[in-house]
Length: 182
Image (cartoon, rainbow, N blue to C red; front, side, top):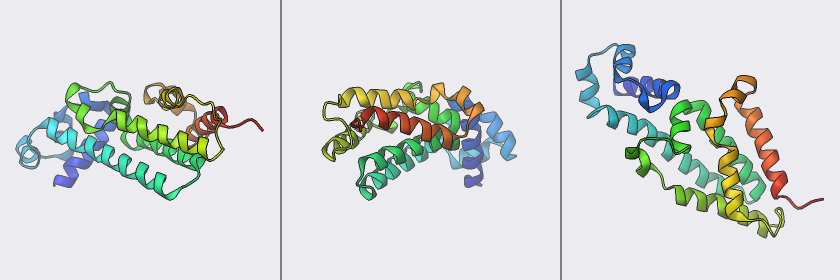
């Protein structure tokens, strides 16, 4: 039953974000509130667990990408694709957490500074590999990276294109700005 509650909550959070009503979870699962509370202390504990799954999965996959792909361009492409897949898999929850519009009690789920440092290291790797311009402003590039992939602006695009198309176009655009001119 715990897995079913978690799965339904994940679907509802993807559709409605952290403002989702726990009563909808209870109704869709078809159990009483006491059953939910037997598995999760309260609504926040349940919602945090779904959010933590996303954050941990993302962190682990970022690290895997960085360690398995030496070429910085491939790392950038893979991490962007992962970011867009989070939108597909976690919807509004991903939008709220990664756009930094979530309630205060979710801020401890991931370290934004560490995430920015990770992206900065990938860009610096590309500079050292000779793929990206040596004069690139890494801090600015990281800021632009976040802006390009900010989930809050994707709603309109997602109605017109697939997540894969958006990730590919955004990645090519971003890499072109970093790359040495041919």
